[in-house]
Structures are given as structure tokens and as C-alpha cells.
Image (tube, rainbow, N blue to C red; front, side, top):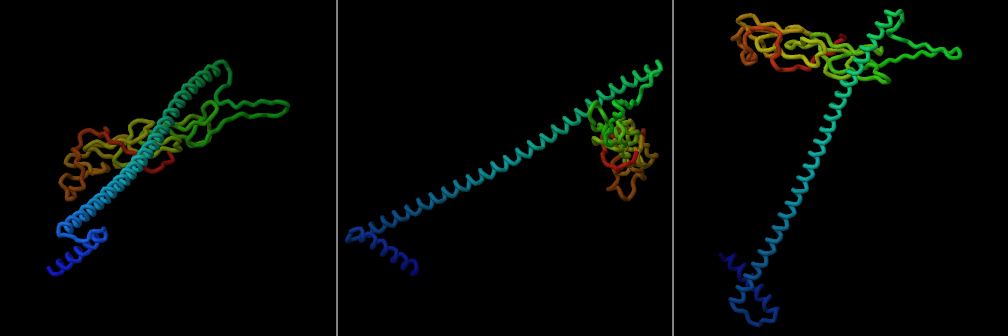
Length: 273
């Protein structure tokens, strides 16, 4: 209490000195209280203005950072969309050129067969032109994973492969094998638990519930024996009710094999096939 009173007396003396410096010879208690209230209001107004200015700066900084984040996200989305469009265009162009090339080769085969019947040798032609004693051999070759179409090399579509430099067409993957990328030089075998029934497959299908495939490159899945269920990766069967129930898939008992359960598989090792 004494400290508070001494501080109050000191503050009142400061106020009185301020009032007297303004030319007022006498100061009443009300003058001191009025000056004290005026100073208090001035300090409160100054603090309020500083608080509002700080809040405005903080809000502007948050808005600037949010705008930068939005711009960065928009740029990433734009780049991803451009990549998706480019991949789709490449796939569509390769498929279209493949269809045109197949039709052209079919016509060439038909013409070659008609030429053989007339005694004209046609087929794989190497044109040998001799001009002024110079022999010019015209031939075309493409890197493995590409085939020759017209005047340039085209990547093999998905589901096909080519291992040689010859300009012949790409070969479709065999049953039980797949190729999901362009320019494939070989197909990959379907892993255990998956299968590929058709030729030219781009992705292997998972075995349906109650079926399994325990070999690489399976063409169809087999049904689990009665009293057993397929394990979680469909690579085999086990007796129902074993101790590792938490790791056992919720697959139904076997009834009919070789059908897809709706899933796709795109893993596997490179094969020379």
C-alpha cells in the first residue's frame, strides 16, 4: 500500500509539473484527475492503433503466403495435366499408327501372295539399284522395341514386344505374359496369384476368391480344394481355421477357376520371352 501510495504521489507530482509548465500556477485535484484520464485515454488509443496495425500486417502476410501456396499448387496441377495429356496423345498416336501399319502389311501380304501365283518373287524386298557401277542397297531397321512404319520407326504398343533390329512388326505377348509399357523388348510373366488368359495382355488379372495360381506365367487360376481357402496373395491354399487367421485373406472356398476378381497386377520380373 505504501509503495502504491508513493507511486501515486510521484505520478501526481509529475502531472502537476506538466500542468504548471503549461502556465497554470495552481492545480486542483480535479485538474490532476482530468490530466491523468487524458493520458490514460491517449495511451489506450495508441496501443489500440498499434494492435490494429499489427493485426493488419499479420493478415496481409497470411494472405500473401496463402496466395503463394495456391499458385504453387496450381502450377503442379498444370504440369501434371500436361504430362497426362502428353502420355495419352503418345498412346493414341502409337495405337493409330499400329493399326495403319497392320492394314498396310496385310495388303502387302495379299499382294505378295498374288505375285507368287504369277511367278513374281515378292515378300521381304531388298532393292538393288546399279547406277554407273555403284550398287545401292535400300533397307530399313529399327531399334528393339520399335518397328518400321513408312519412313520412320514407331514404338511398339502396350501388350506387344520386339527384340531384334529387323523392321518387321511387333509380336503380341503370349498367354500368361504381359507388357504394360511402350517400346517393350520382352514380355514379363504374370506373378503368382495372377493370370493372363489372352494374348497381347497389358496387365495381369488377380485370381478371384477361392482360386490360386502357384506358378509364374499362369494362363488361368485353379480352384482351392474343399476345406481350404486361398492365402492373401492367392499364390496357394491353406486349411481354413489355421493359426495365422489374421494373415489369411477373406476368400471364399473354391468353385470355378480362371476368372478375374476385378483386380489388376502390373508387377513382375523382366523375361526374355
